[in-house]
Image 1: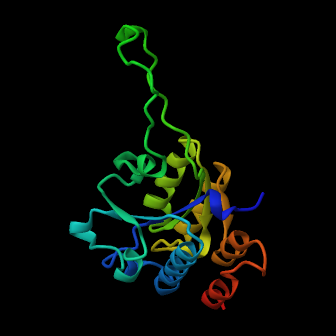
Image 2: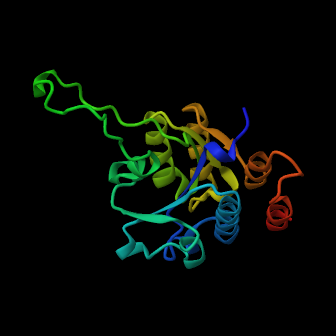
Amino acid sequence: MLLDAQESQLVLVDYQTRLMPAIHDGPQVLANAIRLARIARLLEVPVWGTEQNPQKLGANDAGLRELCQRTLSKMHFSAVADGLADWLRPAARSSGGNARSLPRHLQKPAAPPAPERPTLVVAGCEAHVCLLQTALELIEQEFDVWVVTDACGSRTERNRDAAFDRLAAAGAELLTTEMVAFEWLKTADHPRFREVHALIK
């Protein structure tokens, strides 16, 4: 199975100014996250960001933040607990019927709408805490989750790699920034090929 740009959304978790200096290979992790966001914008893939307790950990890197359509401020380690999944699904549509046609106790509760873009390409820090918990809960919410390993980081390699093992066991696909780029493009004939290629050279 390959990624499809038209079915994808990009979620970038907690690349915060006070956190990144402590992340193993932090500059490269952040560079790949920015590269992913730029590629996504070129290919019209929605880009969402999250920030964990920004009053203490600071905002996301400014260059990354400006590439996100919206950034969710959160206190839970999983962004899903603070409403991320609602952002990733289309707004609920009215059923068009008369809401009073049935007594309330006979009305079925509305199911959350199915996402129009069910494939989530996810990366972030720390891989074994906020990225892991967010990704696992997104899987529980029945999204297809793809984790970009070279754009994820933790303070130690051991914690980062343990997160990847757990995510793979839970059903997440693991891939790299270049894999995302070329799968989203699909062909060298894509009108944005040169621009995307320039970002990953």
